[in-house]
Image 1 (cartoon, protein in one colour):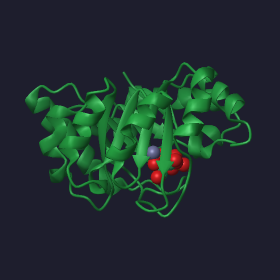
Image 2 (cartoon, helix red, strand yellow):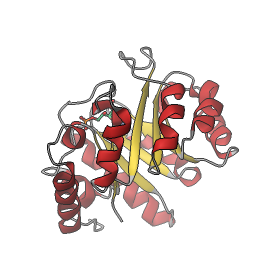
Image 3 (cartoon, rainbow, N blue to C red):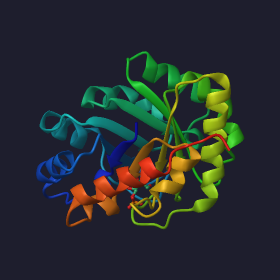
Image 4 (cartoon, protein in one colour):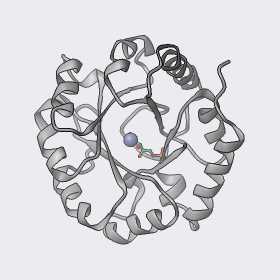
Length: 224
Ligand code: DX5
Ligand code: ZN
């Protein structure tokens, strides 16, 4: 099953409720929420209060992507705000195992993300303890950047490892994805697809999501 996760970063912030409803009606599964602190990444987006406000207006799975330093400080706030999945960056904390524990203790799904410069080998030791691995396909911080095909190898490595260990792991990809290139990431083993500008920026998001699903179905993962 492929999950499509539109990134709210590309929405019209003056009309969040309408924008979210539009992508939900278009067939999205998750709502990807990019939290940026202006320190871990050179940009500031929004925090827990915005998520709290939109939570009653959407039944989508809230997929919170924390691009903040020392994320353990805010786990409680994002759980309270209504996150279903919390993903933090491996590079953003000294003790990833502690952050995993803190999220798990609150019965929320947990993901770890790695930025393009981080070797995938550093993520492998945590894969048996998390629900989702997020492989960044752009340098985090901004929407609308170009997809980096060099990241496909990381997706393959993680999928192969998960299969070899019998792990039920979601692999999310984030950055520069659209209906044209989504087949590359699904063939490599990804099953959660984030797309900001391609979906929120589309005139007909329903068509874009349908085209993404079709391309994903035509390009399934196989162990190669
Ligand atoms: C980048 C964010 C992404 C971004 C994706 O730091 O994590 O989720 O919003 O936007 P697009 O799909 O436009 O690259
Ligand atoms: Zn993101």
